[in-house]
Length: 114
DNA sequence: ACGTTGACTTATT
DNA sequence: AAATAAGCCAACG
Image (cartoon, rainbow, N blue to C red; front, side, top):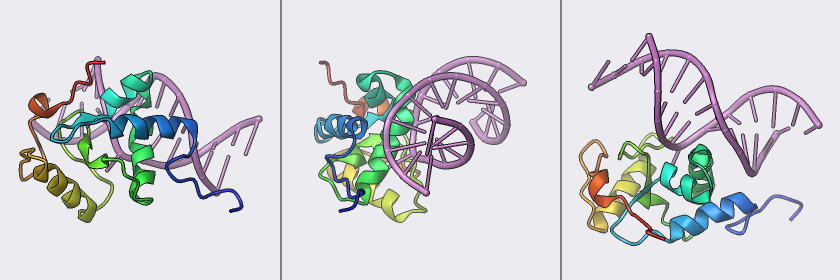
């Protein structure tokens, strides 16, 4: 490997994001802002999504599908295929999601409590 | 080293 | 309610 090829054990910041997402229990979801806040500030929310984007192509064992936006809605860069998979995965965990990919954030929002 | 980018968020119009 | 603007920060070319 010349330089690239950075799996889950990539750069520092990303690694922290993956660690937090992995802590999300099954049947619950979290938002980019929440994770970002745990990492330090809500301002890094963008990087949370970015880190997850890199994950999907690496197939890491990070439950990226449990991470949604503060609007309680699933938003994906992909036209559909991946978004549907995410919704399906959440439904499989017992999360009710609307046809628009919206879910009751106030009910499923995971509070680490730590 | 600099500039662009981006699965976000919040406030404002 | 929906659209627009600004903010903030790390990775990549």
